[in-house]
Length: 129
Image (cartoon, rainbow, N blue to C red):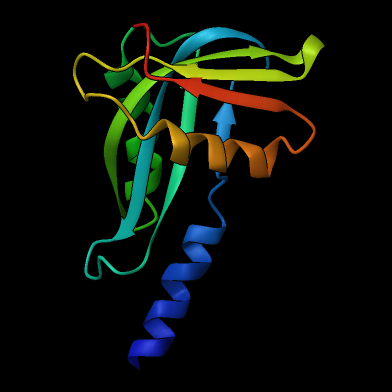
């Protein structure tokens, strides 16, 4: 298989994965994940995952990772934090850090969220846990 054909297959897999999966409201932990091809680090994308049901940031990765690996891709946690999602006021606040994974790049997280919530006011802070 030609390199460009292999790259296109990986890109198709990456594009099939939602950029954002977060709960519809409330405060919860989140992680920023880089998904990449196991053979080519140059083909990748970042996704945001956050769920109220997760007691720990690692719980999110444990839930997401098998689905990513089933596609033949690799999921690498780049850090975490918290999200306060308030749909009534169209606002999302990204803040804090993960004890296990460290602080995610909240600016990157906000960039990804803004593409998926264009009518929202989305902000971030490194303060808080």
